[in-house]
Length: 202
Image (cartoon, rainbow, N blue to C red; front, side, top):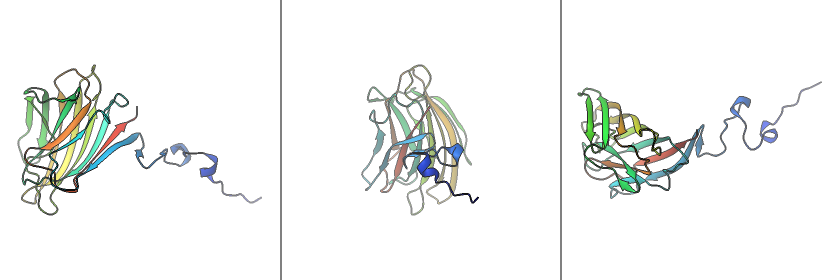
């Protein structure tokens, strides 16, 4: 007897599990256990801060992942991160501790900073110059565990040379965060800069 091909799409609805050869994904905004919460893309060169506020940073998720493809208007600067607590930016002189390794440069280890520097200090703004960063945020909305950041990036600097940077940062306070801010050490985001925020399903 001839065997007929079984249409798994009709038998398993609406999502085909990974174990059955599917993706386990129900929408294009989901990647495995990641849920796309928001994407910001600049359309001009007037944006100074890219914020994800309490609309997106909520108790629904404790951990987040951010994909960053950006370039500055000002040549030779670095991308920075700060957290919000209760809608207010945390920028005290010792709010963050950071450890960073940068290709071809001295390491950074400082427990008294008012920011987390997540890119090299020399991101360029010429044609083709930019920085790509994968950022993981842990315990961001927890008031029990320390909120931390793990990041790695690759960039072309103002001399059109590659730089690799990776490191981590932590909040030196025990409060739940309800927002994050990205900004340059100097100037604005160039047009076409994109940052996507994902919540991590537990």
